[in-house]
Amino acid sequence: MTSTPSLTPTASTNARPLPLAGVRILAVEQYGAGPFGSSYLADMGAEVIKVENHQDGGDVGRTVGPHFFGPGDSQFFQTFNRNKKSITLDLKHPEGKALLRKLVGDADAILNNLRGDLPAKLGLTYDALKDVNPAIVCAHLSAYGREGSRAAWPGYDYLMQAEAGHMSMTGDPEGPPTRYGLSIVDLMTGLAMAYGLLAGVVAARTSGQGTDVDTSLFDVSVHNLNYPGTWYLNAGAVTGRTARSGHPSLSPSELYRTADGWLFVMCNKPKFWSLFADGLGHPEWKEDPRFVDYRQRLANRAELTRLIDEALMARSTQEWMEGLSGKVPVAPVNDIRQALENDFVHERELVRDFEYGDGRKARLLANPIRITGVDLPNKAAPSMGEHTEEVLRDAGLTQEQIDTLRSKGVIA
Image (cartoon, rainbow, N blue to C red; front, side):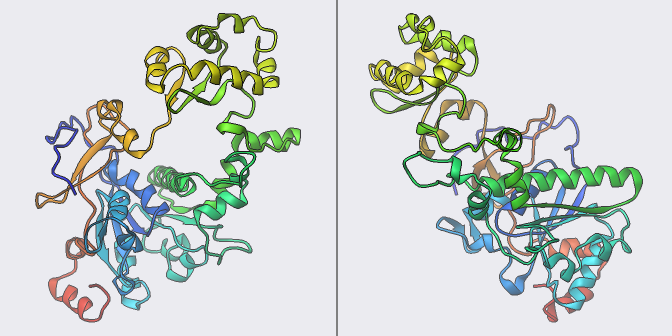
């Protein structure tokens, strides 16, 4: 938590409604992938209502350390759940299932990131809900899909990186296969789910017909093989690891040593190679038959890397950044502190204060999408069950009915 002034204006400057205003989404979600996807929807103005099972302690992300703002309020949880609402509901209780169905009647979509065999058991599929809302979109994010031999398998990001071949392409050729520093499969699968959900909602609002929309960590990780996958499918080529995180088919496009660290250079167009050679004080390299075009530079990569290292080690990373930035695609290798203290991060207003409503603030990374005339919301993630009574009253329940549900343990 921080009291540092926000990097973005606190006053609303909205000239138009938020793009997803009026969209209501129930989210049976926890941990990372699902909540990350729905955070995009909440940031864009959708009413995202987290359905948390208080009998199990709610979203497990609330307890993921090591950093906390308070009990049940981890910094991990805040990252994925700002701008949402939270209700408690035991979906294993018959009255809990009945109450969920009532809420579905006024929703556009319901999403979950459960194990593949659980949505059907909990009544979260289109077949189970279409009688109360024919237009409901049911978005499912699982490890391996809801059908097939692995439907009941648990699964996580790192497993997908391993099995889908990502680790075989990451790291140094002489070292072990390596995972990404971030849970990138979780993040991309969450985004794929949000995209699929919105596609379903657009169609349902036109046709009145809802549907199931499925994605999985495994499917997205295989899809993300992208052009190396195409290379194998059509040319039989198996792309492996390259030294210094280099591009598999372009050079110079990798890490190079400077006097005090590393510089990533990407001369992915002929003009950049020319400008880079000039910037290093070696215009003769442009005419050197070993480096004259992409094919020759790749064939002579080891020698080219040695020569570039030798030239760059004459100055510091910062000095090279000052001389090459904006002309040649270059970047320093920063740690997290350096990355977030970067002046350009501040210029782009990529950090915001998210308000709890009682004067406290959580400093989080801003949504990367910008919409002209719209200031995205900045509410901190809710406490578990913070909006239970509000949502149930909106659904037509009386206080007596709410109190009865609480006494039965259906809600907290």
